[in-house]
Length: 487
Image (cartoon, rainbow, N blue to C red; front, side, top):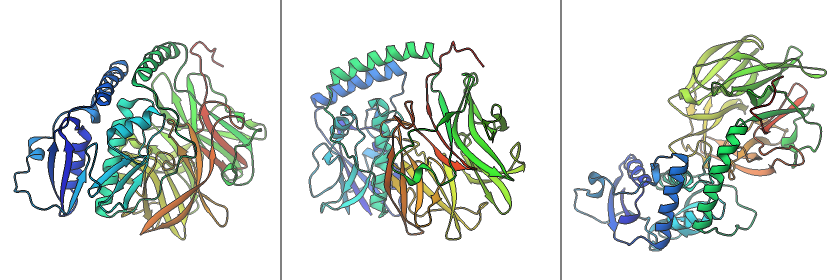
C-alpha cells in the first residue's frame, strides 16, 4: 500500500513522526510525506502560549506537542511520486475525497483543542475518501485538564486508530457522551485558571498527602453493585489507615472458610506500594493490613482467584513491563512467583477470567499516550498460559470504558466487566460493561451502568468494585492531612 500523508508545514507535531514510523511498519506499506505551507492561525499562536505556560508551571517536556519538521528521511522520500493508494490529509481543512481525521466531527488540531477547552475528550473518527467510518475511539489522558499532556496523549491514540483503520482492524465502539458540551473557555480564562490551580496545588500539597486513596467495604453475599444501576446509598465502612499509608484496589477472597481482603498498600514515605492482606471477621477487619507480597517495582491491583485447587494472584507489575502469576504457599501470608505470563508489555490492571472453557486476560496497554484507553486481550488454554495476544489488539480505544476496574463476573446470562471511566481524570467514575462478543475474530461490549462518587460513596473518586467472601469492596480518595495524628 502506498500512502501519501498531507501535513501543514507549520503545524507538525512529534506524533506525526510516530505516525509515519507506525505506518511504515505495516506490511508492504510505504509512506510519502507532502508538506503544505500555511500561516499559523491566531488560535494556534494562543495555544502555543498556553502550552508554554503549562509546561513551565508543571515542568513538562515538550513531548508529542513539540513543533518542528519531520526528519529529512521522512520529509524527502527519495523516490519519484506515483499515485497513492490512500491520501491521508491531516491539514486543517482536508479535502472530502481524502482520508481524514475528525475530532467530535470536525477536522484539525483546533477541533481537538476546542473539545478540551470545553472540558471533554473528543471522539476521534478516521473517515475514508468515500465518507465511510474506518475507525473510531476516544483516546484519553490521565490529566485531561492540561492541554500540554492531553493533546499528545490524544495524538498517540490517533496514531493507533489511523494504523488500525489502514490495516483493516475493527475497533469496538467508544461510549458516547450523554450531556451537551459545556461552553468553550477562552485561552485567557484557561491560563488564569492554570495559574490559580498551580498556586492552590502548592498549598494543598504542603497541607495534605496526595493522592490518598481509601477502601470501603460492606456485607453482601451476591454479585454486588455490578448488577445494578446505582451505588448503594448506605452500608459502606472505611478500612482505617494511619495517614502515612493508603489502601486501594481492594480484592476480597474467601478460602477455607476465611475471608481476606487484599489491597494495594502505598507508603507515602517511599512512594511505592506492596500488596497487603487483612482478614475480615464478624466485626470487620481484624487488625491492620499486613504486607504479603513485595517486589522491586510498585505493586497494585492484587487480582486473586482460585483454580486447579490452588489460590493464585496476578498483581500489576507494569513498571517491570511484565504480567506475573503468583501462587499461595500459605494463604494468605506467603506467595511465590509461579511464572511470567507476559513480558515486555506495560499492562495495567490485568484481569483474568474463564469463558467457555478458555482463559481470557484483559488489560490496558500503554503505547506512548494514556495508560487507560487501549484495551488489549489475550487468551490461553490454561491460567499459566501460553497466552496469545488477540489479532486485533487493541480491540477498543476508549478512555471511558477500556481499563478494568475489578473482576469479570457472570450473572448466568451476561458477562459483566467493571471498567474505569477516566474522561474527567483518573478514578473520576466507573461503569459496568456487558461483553457482547468475545472470540478470536472480535470483541464488543455495551455499557449498562455508570457510577460516580456522591450519595452512595462519598469522596472525589470511585475506582474499583469487587465481591467475595460475603463482602463487597470499593475504593476512592479522601483528604489526608500531613499533621494528622497517627493511630
